Length: 457
Ligand SMILES: [Zn+2]
Image (cartoon, rainbow, N blue to C red; front, side, top):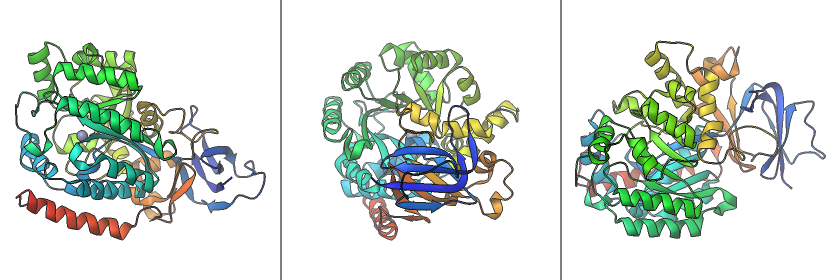
């Protein structure tokens, strides 16, 4: 049995009573959390194999990013200060439509390196097209040590909302093939790498699938007992399209085709109405709130604080390299809180505890992993991160949770442990070769831009 004793720091448990334990300790045995408490209370039966001194540091559950595009790390910053349709049509799609599986792998590894280095231990990838190379990316998750759910794109129409046939030909896939591929990937990868890999359906947004295909996705997910993720009501066009084509609001239509339920994550949900929140809450579906992406693409401001009051489970997401432009969940904590405060003109809304929950236990719930991850509790998986609080911008520490949400940076994360394995120690990632990953990604990014015939300034 491998045991790791993390001792001396402030343990921010995010358990049901939000215990924060000063001079705390967490004992990890193999892949599980065996003990949690004050340092003097946590006693391994025999000396722990590894001891990590965390005096002056904070110990948190690993963060859960509920909306990630792994394949967009390679095109970070390719379309800044651009309108959404131009952003997609002139830059993102032509670039992704020229990807090969080596680009897909290089991008995923770059993205995972960034996530590990900023405290994310689990993620939900929302749209993997076949050309990115599903197997190569799944292999990279296994190697990286991360916990990740990969959603294979399912689509049949090359449009976005009412804009028909605007998608780059390299991105277009056929519905039946997509459905078949999800099953193949599910059989090959779901539950692999000691249970760290999951495979879901990634339904393309409205205008990308026929109603019949959405029904087939719902049936497939029920049969495989797996999840579905989809961009929904990100922009007002989604609402216009759903009303025009189906005579319903987007979430009402999704409910009609059987796509609202547990292990269903709708990304963005900016334009969802009160009535739609009620549907999601009643059916236990989740929303992945992506504040930086919504602000940068001027999509609008999601009514997150009211959504939460209405009983919707809301997680947090970084989205992608061209829309955020980083995969740093700690930055997202502050952004999520401030955006709701300015929207509601109420400084009491979305306090630090609420946003930290979104990035941990609520993210875990969205993925159907609430019993395994998302908080530091005995019996859960040994996924945790350690933040160095001995920094000028984190001094003094009156309230560690507030300091983490409002003042910390991703680079304050020193240690990451996933499934009982030390994946990063003193900011050195042990599973991925940082210099190599960066070198390969830079080289591939320039070649990709050249191949797509673009010039990006
Ligand atoms: Zn997205």
